[in-house]
Amino acid sequence: MHIPEKGETIQIHSYKHNGLIHRIWSETTVLKGTKTLLIGANNRTTVTESDGRIWITREPAICYFHSRYWFNIIGMLRSDGIYYYCNLSSPFVIDGKALKYIDYDLDIKVFPDFSYIILDEDEYDAHRKEMGYPDVIDQILKMHMDKLIEMIQQKQGPFEPGFIDNWYGRFLMLNEHFHK
Image (cartoon, rainbow, N blue to C red; front, top):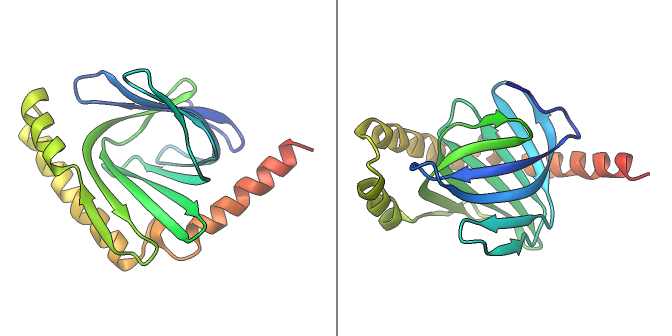
């Protein structure tokens, strides 16, 4: 597996369990890449939905992917604080110039005060039946949902105070370096 290097630009491809593409982010700058972890950043990047609809992200975001976790975390820097969008998903793989994962519908939105809401439980239940998610996947996702909630409550990993700001600062310095 090719490990993207700091400063490299990759795409992010989200799939559904049935193998169909769900969403593509056209450009994310790698801030850290190892076999187990990828931290990236993007700002005003083009996103293409499976139905062909195209939109552009509104704010800078730090993306956190870990090969041991069945979730990924996006920290969005907004004027009133950092919001997190957490996707329950397969661990990531790198395929060429793209980071890929399977989106398993369930999401957690975390607010700047670290309160949170679980989203899309109905969508998960419908897709679980429709696409035949195996029981083992359901068990893994429930276990990792618990781990994710624990990280939020204990302000660990990307939820640690300063984590998103620190990586965003690195992104700005990297962009400054490359655009001189």
